[in-house]
Amino acid sequence: MIVLDVMMPDMDGFSVLKEIRRTSRVPVLMLTARGEAEDRIEGLEIGADDYLAKPFLPKELLLRVGAILNRAYPKQNEMVELAGATVDMANAEVWKNGEKQTLTAKEMQLFEKLYQNAGRIVTTGILCETICGEFWQGYESTLSTHIRHLREKIEENPSKPVSLVTVKGLGYRLNLKEVSP
Image (tube, rainbow, N blue to C red; front, side, top):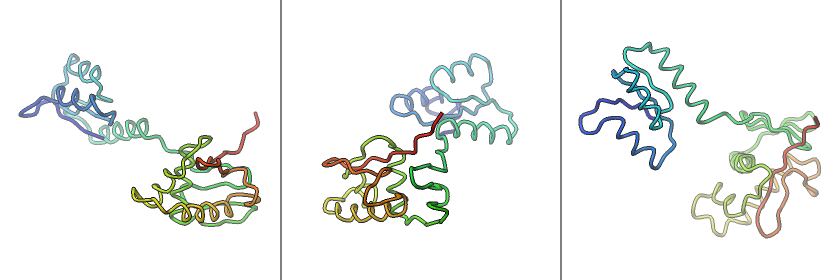
Protein backbone atom coordinates (compact mmCIF):
# COMPACT_ATOMS: atom_id res chain seq x y z
CA MET A 1 0.00 0.00 0.00
CA ILE A 2 1.14 3.54 -0.72
CA VAL A 3 0.40 6.58 1.44
CA LEU A 4 0.85 9.54 -0.88
CA ASP A 5 1.03 13.28 -0.20
CA VAL A 6 -0.21 15.72 -2.81
CA MET A 7 2.32 18.48 -2.17
CA MET A 8 5.78 17.19 -3.06
CA PRO A 9 8.81 19.09 -4.42
CA ASP A 10 9.24 17.82 -8.00
CA MET A 11 5.95 16.22 -8.96
CA ASP A 12 2.60 16.58 -7.22
CA GLY A 13 0.85 13.54 -5.77
CA PHE A 14 -1.90 13.61 -8.39
CA SER A 15 0.70 13.19 -11.17
CA VAL A 16 2.44 10.44 -9.20
CA LEU A 17 -0.88 8.64 -8.75
CA LYS A 18 -1.61 8.87 -12.49
CA GLU A 19 1.78 7.26 -13.19
CA ILE A 20 1.16 4.53 -10.62
CA ARG A 21 -2.26 3.74 -12.11
CA ARG A 22 -0.76 3.23 -15.58
CA THR A 23 0.86 0.00 -14.38
CA SER A 24 -0.47 -0.93 -10.93
CA ARG A 25 -3.58 -1.44 -8.84
CA VAL A 26 -1.66 -1.15 -5.56
CA PRO A 27 -3.88 0.47 -2.91
CA VAL A 28 -3.21 4.22 -2.49
CA LEU A 29 -4.31 6.51 0.34
CA MET A 30 -3.88 10.22 -0.35
CA LEU A 31 -2.83 11.92 2.92
CA THR A 32 -2.43 15.64 2.49
CA ALA A 33 -3.05 19.13 3.78
CA ARG A 34 -5.07 19.85 0.64
CA GLY A 35 -8.53 19.02 1.90
CA GLU A 36 -10.72 21.06 -0.44
CA ALA A 37 -13.60 19.16 -2.00
CA GLU A 38 -12.12 19.59 -5.50
CA ASP A 39 -8.81 18.05 -4.40
CA ARG A 40 -10.54 15.07 -2.72
CA ILE A 41 -12.70 14.49 -5.78
CA GLU A 42 -9.70 14.71 -8.12
CA GLY A 43 -7.72 12.23 -6.03
CA LEU A 44 -10.57 9.73 -5.98
CA GLU A 45 -11.33 10.21 -9.69
CA ILE A 46 -7.78 9.40 -10.74
CA GLY A 47 -7.66 6.23 -8.67
CA ALA A 48 -6.97 6.85 -4.98
CA ASP A 49 -8.64 4.29 -2.76
CA ASP A 50 -9.22 6.90 -0.06
CA TYR A 51 -8.35 10.53 0.71
CA LEU A 52 -7.58 11.85 4.17
CA ALA A 53 -6.92 15.53 4.86
CA LYS A 54 -4.61 16.85 7.56
CA PRO A 55 -5.05 17.30 10.43
CA PHE A 56 -6.28 13.78 11.12
CA LEU A 57 -6.58 11.46 14.09
CA PRO A 58 -3.97 8.66 14.09
CA LYS A 59 -6.70 6.11 14.89
CA GLU A 60 -8.69 7.26 11.84
CA LEU A 61 -5.61 6.77 9.64
CA LEU A 62 -5.11 3.24 11.03
CA LEU A 63 -8.77 2.35 10.49
CA ARG A 64 -8.75 3.67 6.92
CA VAL A 65 -5.53 1.78 6.12
CA GLY A 66 -7.01 -1.40 7.60
CA ALA A 67 -10.22 -1.01 5.58
CA ILE A 68 -8.29 -0.44 2.35
CA LEU A 69 -6.04 -3.44 2.95
CA ASN A 70 -9.02 -5.68 3.79
CA ARG A 71 -10.72 -4.67 0.53
CA ALA A 72 -7.57 -5.00 -1.57
CA TYR A 73 -6.30 -8.21 0.01
CA PRO A 74 -9.24 -10.12 1.48
CA LYS A 75 -8.37 -12.94 3.83
CA GLN A 76 -8.86 -16.34 2.36
CA ASN A 77 -11.11 -18.80 4.11
CA GLU A 78 -8.96 -20.27 6.87
CA MET A 79 -10.88 -23.56 7.09
CA VAL A 80 -11.01 -25.44 3.77
CA GLU A 81 -13.52 -28.27 3.53
CA LEU A 82 -12.53 -31.23 1.36
CA ALA A 83 -14.37 -34.50 0.78
CA GLY A 84 -12.40 -36.40 3.43
CA ALA A 85 -10.70 -33.73 5.53
CA THR A 86 -10.65 -30.13 6.70
CA VAL A 87 -7.52 -28.02 6.25
CA ASP A 88 -6.84 -25.25 8.76
CA MET A 89 -4.88 -22.78 6.65
CA ALA A 90 -3.92 -20.56 9.59
CA ASN A 91 -2.24 -23.41 11.47
CA ALA A 92 -1.15 -25.68 8.57
CA GLU A 93 -3.16 -28.55 10.03
CA VAL A 94 -5.36 -31.21 8.52
CA TRP A 95 -8.24 -32.74 10.43
CA LYS A 96 -9.30 -36.16 9.17
CA ASN A 97 -11.40 -38.71 11.04
CA GLY A 98 -11.06 -36.64 14.22
CA GLU A 99 -7.25 -36.71 14.09
CA LYS A 100 -4.91 -33.81 13.48
CA GLN A 101 -1.88 -33.92 11.19
CA THR A 102 0.50 -31.06 10.50
CA LEU A 103 1.42 -30.03 6.98
CA THR A 104 5.10 -29.51 6.16
CA ALA A 105 6.18 -26.17 4.69
CA LYS A 106 6.31 -27.62 1.16
CA GLU A 107 2.92 -29.31 1.55
CA MET A 108 1.47 -26.02 2.76
CA GLN A 109 2.97 -24.14 -0.20
CA LEU A 110 1.46 -26.66 -2.60
CA PHE A 111 -1.91 -26.65 -0.88
CA GLU A 112 -2.06 -22.83 -0.88
CA LYS A 113 -1.29 -22.69 -4.62
CA LEU A 114 -3.89 -25.35 -5.36
CA TYR A 115 -6.46 -23.66 -3.10
CA GLN A 116 -5.91 -20.28 -4.79
CA ASN A 117 -6.86 -22.05 -8.03
CA ALA A 118 -9.47 -24.46 -6.64
CA GLY A 119 -11.46 -26.19 -9.37
CA ARG A 120 -8.89 -25.28 -12.03
CA ILE A 121 -5.90 -27.17 -13.34
CA VAL A 122 -2.55 -26.06 -11.93
CA THR A 123 0.29 -27.19 -14.15
CA THR A 124 3.16 -29.33 -12.96
CA GLY A 125 5.53 -26.49 -13.87
CA ILE A 126 3.68 -23.96 -11.71
CA LEU A 127 3.63 -26.35 -8.76
CA CYS A 128 7.33 -27.20 -9.17
CA GLU A 129 8.13 -23.50 -9.31
CA THR A 130 6.06 -22.98 -6.15
CA ILE A 131 8.19 -25.40 -4.13
CA CYS A 132 11.56 -25.14 -5.90
CA GLY A 133 11.77 -21.61 -7.32
CA GLU A 134 12.32 -20.59 -10.91
CA PHE A 135 14.93 -23.30 -11.61
CA TRP A 136 12.56 -26.22 -11.13
CA GLN A 137 13.27 -28.37 -14.18
CA GLY A 138 14.11 -31.90 -13.07
CA TYR A 139 12.09 -31.64 -9.85
CA GLU A 140 8.95 -33.31 -11.18
CA SER A 141 9.62 -36.48 -9.17
CA THR A 142 10.10 -34.34 -6.03
CA LEU A 143 6.71 -32.78 -6.74
CA SER A 144 5.15 -36.23 -7.10
CA THR A 145 6.51 -37.19 -3.67
CA HIS A 146 5.08 -34.04 -2.05
CA ILE A 147 1.72 -34.62 -3.77
CA ARG A 148 1.67 -38.22 -2.50
CA HIS A 149 2.37 -37.07 1.08
CA LEU A 150 -0.27 -34.35 0.82
CA ARG A 151 -2.81 -36.87 -0.48
CA GLU A 152 -2.04 -39.20 2.43
CA LYS A 153 -3.06 -36.38 4.76
CA ILE A 154 -6.13 -34.99 2.97
CA GLU A 155 -7.69 -37.93 1.12
CA GLU A 156 -9.94 -40.61 2.59
CA ASN A 157 -8.31 -43.08 0.18
CA PRO A 158 -5.04 -41.64 -1.21
CA SER A 159 -4.95 -44.34 -3.92
CA LYS A 160 -8.27 -43.05 -5.29
CA PRO A 161 -8.11 -39.28 -4.75
CA VAL A 162 -11.23 -37.15 -5.06
CA SER A 163 -9.94 -33.85 -3.66
CA LEU A 164 -6.45 -33.64 -5.16
CA VAL A 165 -6.75 -35.20 -8.59
CA THR A 166 -4.21 -35.70 -11.34
CA VAL A 167 -5.03 -34.22 -14.74
CA LYS A 168 -2.94 -36.43 -17.03
CA GLY A 169 -0.25 -34.59 -18.92
CA LEU A 170 -1.09 -31.22 -17.38
CA GLY A 171 -0.95 -31.11 -13.60
CA TYR A 172 -3.35 -31.27 -10.67
CA ARG A 173 -6.71 -29.88 -9.58
CA LEU A 174 -8.03 -29.32 -6.06
CA ASN A 175 -11.74 -30.06 -5.69
CA LEU A 176 -13.40 -28.49 -2.67
CA LYS A 177 -16.25 -30.20 -0.85
CA GLU A 178 -19.58 -29.42 -2.43
CA VAL A 179 -21.96 -27.79 -0.01
CA SER A 180 -25.60 -28.85 -0.21
CA PRO A 181 -28.18 -26.03 -0.26
